[in-house]
Image 1 (cartoon, rainbow, N blue to C red):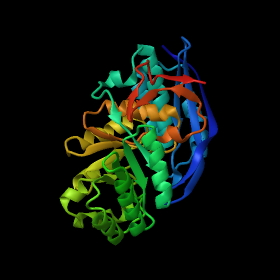
Image 2 (cartoon, one colour; image 1 turned 45 degrees about the vertical axis):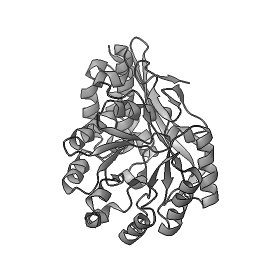
Image 3 (cartoon, rainbow, N blue to C red; image 1 turned 135 degrees about the horizontal axis):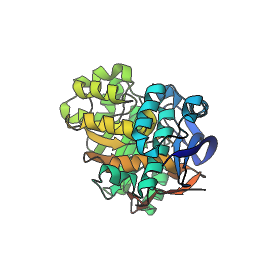
Length: 354
């Protein structure tokens, strides 16, 4: 079955409410969409929202790349060769993971629909449902408690709290969350590279009794080596994010024994195929998988979910990016019940283009 047509377009998607991380305050996000139509009318859709400060590519460049002659040459190609098309695109758009991801996801969706099976079942399903965290940005104690209360009402069970500006006030927020909610929430934190080593050590000391499940990317990648001074039991709770971009960085990190967890984001590694390359490296190194996201469409969030469920060593989900959006280009994809997330088992990614 041949590819009949392709198209790319951008949508600036408003957030339901702004939030703050260590680097910035975010109010809306630009996502790039890529559609592939087959001769029989099947449509596959991909999406991308790469972070320029992390991967060096922004949505404008992604959109431009998806309109290139190279991508247009996919017309007439057989969808059964989708993996070859993906790896050819990865080679052509080297170090441009947003472009890679949009193409990868659209081709996976089209191929799954062509076979009439979910993408996860093509690779082999290892999970049926997993808890996902929901994110609280950097705010004062009162605001943190109020937002956590909203999530408790919605039956979420895992919080990821953004930290990284001040270790003392960050620790106070975690302590107050424990005082207010007891063990109702699993608590994770994400410093977005905001700490130096002394600040990290201060945060660890102040929160050692609060049962923080994991700490995501506490320091800048350039000073990762300082983490070696931490005890191994602490390093096992550290999740590499900004330090982990692709299979090359995954191999390096697995050898350095600095992080016990890899946070895989399709917008960093170029899609489902790239994610599986990282997962393959992590498994023999006994590194757990943590699947994260930017503020993304349901399209790419669902793609990450399918990839996560196809890896036996997936332990953590943080796939709440589309929940922050006030609008989207698709519906469907997944469901969340009592904090547990799972795909809808429809063919491809199970999304409906609006």
